[in-house]
Every structure is written in structure tokens, then in C-alpha cells.
Length: 403
Picture 1 (spheres, rainbow, N blue to C red):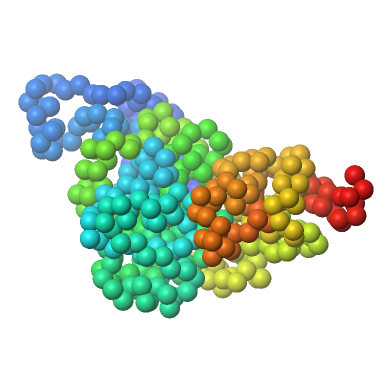
Picture 2 (cartoon, rainbow, N blue to C red):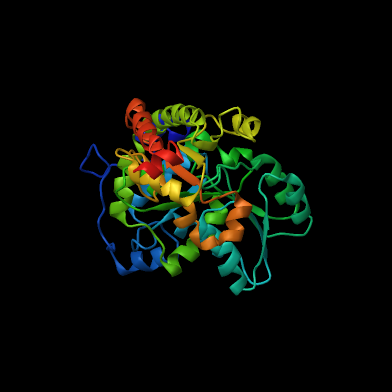
């Protein structure tokens, strides 16, 4: 069989990890089973001693999960992958499997709300020091990493403001401090950014987003070196039970077959939407990494191959104007999900980042006028028309007062 690591991404997404049973099925088989049987008691003993390879229990591993793990590892260029029930389970497992009391973690401030909670609230409960830095400021990284550190966590582009971190530069600083670097690569996907090639040690994903990308199932993935996965992550998975279900793995296996087609088109749509929004008088600011006016445009072009599927923008006014705009949308749905084939809009200050607090949101640049738009696969002309008619409802204070 061809080594899937030598294939191009579009082929890896269709063929990677394929392991047909003796029935010769075309589609990947769904092994919807909790446990597995042994030919003998001796085989069972040898399996639990790790003397032979044999599936034991779907909490530890399952053939359907293995196919998806091998496919994602080939795509990412990682030695190994393990699947989790959700993206947050992936982040939690990557950190808590490695960190212990007395350790130190440095994180970029711009994180998804639940990731921010883990760093700011959960880790300190276990005596783990957590330090936040502004991810785009290398001087802050240098200062924070002048002290020995165990792990670094960063997200680039960030949720929701699409801030970037210089992954290669931070990895160099982190490794000098003795730290492993964990990169949340959800917004970029493995197609647009390659953190392991830029020096990262561990990459995490919410497979719920682009990999399924059709609003069906939850899932997460952690990718890294084989030794770390086997010796650190796998015992944590085995004994705490955050693993993905075989059914969800099978759905995501089928989803990733079209990942490149979907992401390529969604990026084209997002770029066009960003350009449209930038010309509207109702919009104070548009954030899209591949627009020349993005403050980190040069870095985006250097470490990404496209601008991504998310566009963030600030509507003049505040919460009332944002809600008015969102409620006027006819095609785009209001949802806190992203990376879906359907375009989705959310108001981060009252949803995904509500619990990080007003002061912290201000540091992140999230205002009451901020909207995060996940651009889908609709015809971009229809998307722009829908956005235009919704923005038209904000035309003038006089027009609003006249209603």
C-alpha cells in the first residue's frame, strides 16, 4: 500500500489511514463496538502486558479511530495522533497529561473562552503557574520565557479577533526555556498552516469545525511525537476516558474527504466578504489575515497559505447595532459554531467570550460591536446580498427613529 505521508493533501484526505477488513469494503468500516474478544486467555494477558498489539476496549482504541488518527497524522506531518470526544477535551488532555503541580505554563492571551478558563482558572487550582502574554508581542514572550517553563499554549489565528503569533519565533524561545509548545490550529486547519514544521511540539484541533464541517458531530484531536503520545498522552486517555466515539470518528472520516475542497472555497468566499465589508460605512474595522490592512499581514502571508474562513468586524455603535444587524440576517444563521458549510454569525462578547470578563475582553480587542462571521459554501453573491440588506437596517439614526 502507498505510504500516505508521501501523497499530496487532497489524496491523503481521501486515502490516508485506509484499512479495509477482509470484506473489502469501499467506504471505511464503522466498528461500533465497545470491546473486543481474544482467541485465548494467553492472548488477552499478552495484550494487557503490551507484548502484542490487539484492540482491548474502545476507550483505549478502535479500528475506526485508528484510520482517522493515521489520516490526520499523515496530513499534519505528525508521528502520532489521538482522538478526543471534543476539541476542549483535546486541549485539556494535551495540557493536563503533561503538567503537574509546580510547573509553569505561558499562554497567549487571545484564546477561545474555554481555553482561557483552563489557563486562568483550572490550572492554578492544581498549583500550576499560568502566565498570559500578548501573543503578537515578541518582547513579552521573551520576558515570560526568560524563566524555565514547562509548556506554552497559543492559538493562531486567534478566536475571534484573528490575531497572529509568530509560531517559529515563539517556538525557538520556548524550547530555550525547556517548554513544549502546544498550538491550537483550528482556524487555520492543517491545510493553511503547518505548526509542526514551524517548530511546535503538539497541535490540537476541534474536529467539530472544518473537519466535520457540516454541523453533525463533536470531536477533537491531539497530534505530536510518538514517544510523547505513547508515554504521556495515552495513559491519560486510558485512565480518564476522553476518547471519541467510533461513530463520530466515522462521520469525520467521511467529512475530511472533502476538507480541501470546502476550505479552499470558503477561503475564497471569506476574502470576498472581507473586501465587501471593508467598503461599508456601517463597519468600523474589518479583520482578515490576508487583507493588506491587517496589522500582521506580513506574518500571515509568511506562515499561512490563505487567509482562512473567518472574518471578524466591528460594527459602529455597539451591542444594539450588532443585534439589529444579526437579527436582520436572512441567509446567515446566528450560531456560536464555526468552520461549517453554512455561514454563521456570532456576537463573541455575549456568547463565546462572555465569561472571560469585560476587562479581559477589552485587552483582547473584543468590543460590544464585534461580530465573528464564519463564511460557508453558499454562493458568495448571495452572502454579500444578505450582509448588505442587514447592514442597510443600520443606515442612519434618523431612519431607525422613523420606524
